[in-house]
Length: 506
Image (tube, one colour):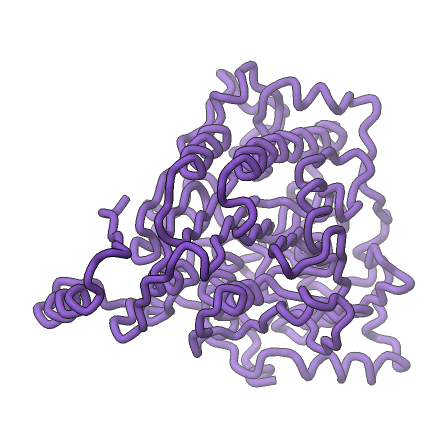
């Protein structure tokens, strides 16, 4: 937590600026990314919207409003979706927590920053970057954050007027609950505790208290939920909503990896998590744990939205809900994220902008989470910093069918990219291996078309969107600095550690 820095509407901005500049001259203030030359207006309550910014960790397209799983229970998220616009083809910049969040919160893509993995500290790579939260602070917003927003140990003190650390969750007395030896965080099962004991519930309480307060200037309230991140430990009633005998497994194809190049197979790692799940007869229980965790976090979002609707800020607040990446539960014999297929990269994205978005609207254009930074700037009437590589979604918020020819690029590791257009997914790995899927005929990505001559032109068109600059991976944190709740996966490291430089610049 850092001391509050509050700009009073009744204060003297010029005097404050002189004080800040004086501090700068004696080297007291932080300098990394804190732009002292930025304009610092003191907006009145009515001329700029508030922002309620809700992040949900590891939530894939199983949310009800995206229809990814028939048993998903997300009534509160579905209700919010009905109030604004759902982006049905929204994708992350990277299928891992840290690089995805860094890209979203700085507007800088992984290939530009060199932040590819969960243990890459991002500030050394982007020392001058102004985060989304910093930018709103510099324009007079009251920026409070709680929970998981940046990844693990890489929180950014420059971003917050106040940051509230989410408490840890209770743990079962004996682990693992799923019977998989050496499971670490790859575990699931019910807890015999009330919702109030959970960290996400306490986070919701904190956010509700914020909404009950009087705020004399526009606020940016960022709430970062941890579930449905592993381990899937949530109160028992959420598990009981999904009886094991009724669990529906994802649709899979037994030989799905037969036409996948070696780099893709290494990412899938079928002899790792998937083999352990099958050997312990855990597939149904795992799906139950994920569904239970989704239902739990949906209940917390529901509590937050109820308080928001009862607050005086409901009519002048933009609400954004996003997930940082997708999640596999056995598709392509793969578990977790850390891959470049649809299930690992597609994310939920809802935007409710009063006076702009039409209730119940849906946009089928391909958009990236990196587009959120410029979108919120435009909605709030702020300039967009030059570092930002995303594109504002405001034209689509006004008209979901507006022209939008830009596909989404997702990156996992140096020189491994996926390009997703409205119809196709094209993957090129650092060793030159390729995959191509036609979502009009193959939404589950079962048939790789990359070697078929008739699709050469399609690949050529999609390859034009591959990053022209691919920065080498930045430094990696020592073990003591890594997040204790999510360890970087070792199985794909060989692929990422020895990049093929022959593709540089293509």
